[in-house]
Length: 251
Image (cartoon, rainbow, N blue to C red):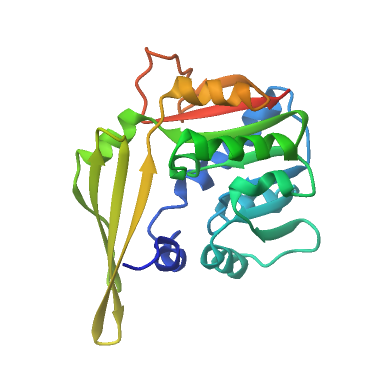
């Protein structure tokens, strides 16, 4: 089976996988500014093909785009080469951010947290983010809720993209015992008169929202706000939402 990132990097934005980050980034910046955030230096963690980073750079922010996939970073560089000192790309494991030399006024992490396989693996990620954030500054991330991942499993086979040269389908399995959603991508790409088939798998782990809030507090953050993607309030045990946005300040 082909590596998830090496297969999807060239078509990631074409099939809509960067849409959430691209749509949320300007809204998050506007929301943060309306709630007294100021700053210029931003880290885009798990930047993928750079949809969020491009917007940030084009709007005057000094942006560091970080991802562990060289294929994703190569596509990001192709879509927007580094411009002076305003945009830089770095290949780095997010579990090793504590060794990073530099600091930021804002850290964004879209479509990232569910890829950590356990709270034990997620803890050094949060600790590293606390290390690279300036005191009082903001960490923003989203997660699929367990409810949201369960809904993925309720639609086991879907056609997510089709045009004359590319067709992409997904097959989804949800493990209720381990709260893990496995999404298999099956792509057919036209190459002249032939159609070539590729497949890869992405695994997402569901977390109780309260467990994430507790982990943030343990790693040096104060949870400022939890919201739905339409910026409505998220209340534990009451709000039904497929995704939750966390906004947390470094202590």
